Length: 168
Image: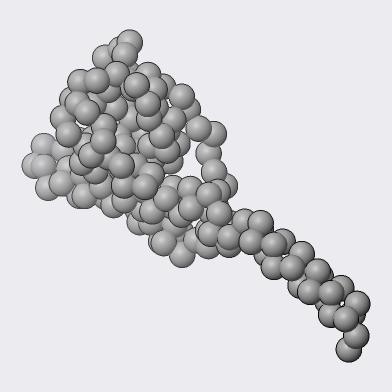
């Protein structure tokens, strides 16, 4: 192989190596966001299952058949999301809200809107992207970007959500 051929081969390999470095890694942000949403959806469904199972032991529960039917749907949905491939998940439309939390963040913390009515909407944060929940200070107003993931069994608008981002 001559000098010119070695130079051309080196240039081609250099371009190839640079091009590989410029491509997005397989685990890009959208995929990471989808994984977070699926994980948070599963968490929300499990929380609702626990809540409704507690309703069923109440001796004076009047809508037992309705609760049992919804519980059955929750179990179906749980199985669906546990078996879902990330590529199959369609991200919901994000919402941009202004609000606060009352206490330090834990799973199922309610985000209160700055101008919220008694009938909601209610947003239960079950996951914060990049595990940044501890950075959200109680009683401080933030601009949140949230993804409503799963509607809770409740007469008012009430959702389990993933917090993608927040800033003061």
